[in-house]
Length: 385
Image (cartoon, rainbow, N blue to C red; front, side, top):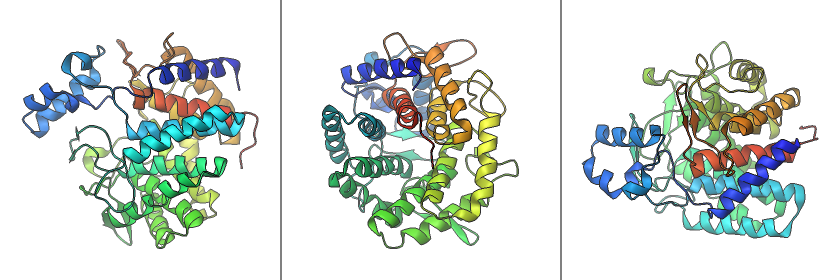
């Protein structure tokens, strides 16, 4: 691993461990007792509060009574990161960290659902729907599930498989199946009817792994049907809209990366191979459209700003496993560390044309940056299959 990148990872690890892996989130405004009252439980005031807090370069959360907390998705990404460190270094202390994250994930499971699933530690409101705190999402549950399965394979800890296998029950039995011709997409949560490509593909990719590792009944057929649904909506240039609703016709960097990472999971399971051509077209689009020669990422396919820490982080994860793009992965990582990392070790949220939002969000910034950097570390010097 490039020494500069490794030093960056060491400094980031020092920061998150000092913080105890708790922190703020761009979307946690409604954890403020004051803002919760002022929004009166209404959609547009909630959105206004969320956007104000998210966009402010000054962290108002301490003044508004928003506590730092454990975010389940961050816990999953940290689990994945420390699992990768253990895979490379085999240090016993890393196993203690892994047990810590398994304990926290066990405690933060969503109640009252089939199997296991995870949501967020805050209420959040989008233009499409409102999601109460702890409502399980397919995105959170899939990322956590993939982390659990990888750590199970690297450490042999049965506890990981025991937590991961029931996620299939949540996906198969609690999420809605939104019909689309001969196929269907999984809903984002059990509460909505919103078909989002990255969410659908991530859920399907976990099911195909659970079919192979746990023999989950019905998982293979559902996974392949959901995969085919999103693949038929791939655009001619290799891209996908975020979703097919007219209000969701944008193309961004990190969700493109999520789509491709999920599709690659199928190929590694020797499934869905008829979609190889579409995948290769998507990889070329991702590599050529969103990153310049310096490694600087663009948020959208047609404009650069805001430069978001999510974009380089996911790109490192994806391209570090693509032999033809290993150099690109390192270039992106170096750009991120040189432009978005604070001297204290944490990563900034976003860089706009006019200012840098330096709020150190634990899930959005630190967990994702660590996921990306540890992926580079894990695959340094390897020839990925």
